[in-house]
Amino acid sequence: MTSDSTTLHNKETPTSGAFASEVGFLLAERHCEDVAILNVTGLSQVCDYVVVATGTSDRQMKSVASEVSKLGNEKNFPAFRKSVDSDATWIVVDFVTVVVHLFEPQRRAYYDLEDLWSDAKRVEVPTKSAT
Image: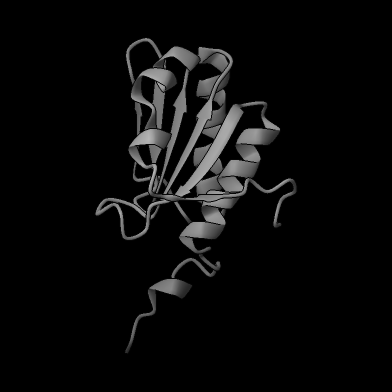
């Protein structure tokens, strides 16, 4: 008897790139600002895509982080871990191959992940959902 992990849940698992694009679309739809999708494949030993966005409030960021986690579950791409700093100025949702960072504006400027990953290829944020 053989086991095929891709059919375990009877759903198709999207590629990391497709999932990162879906997340980018969701963030833009939920009024996050300056959404960036970075393809760090070959540059990072940790993940393939980094998605970065700025939230307008801690409440919005927490809500969007929950929606991103829910999207992962719906797409058979469940979150491995979610981390929120004590002031909710930086929320990370880790899907292993895709890591989503939601920042408040000052925190995003301080960490400047886009500059850190300046060699990464930027992926265009979709203007409509693939599903």
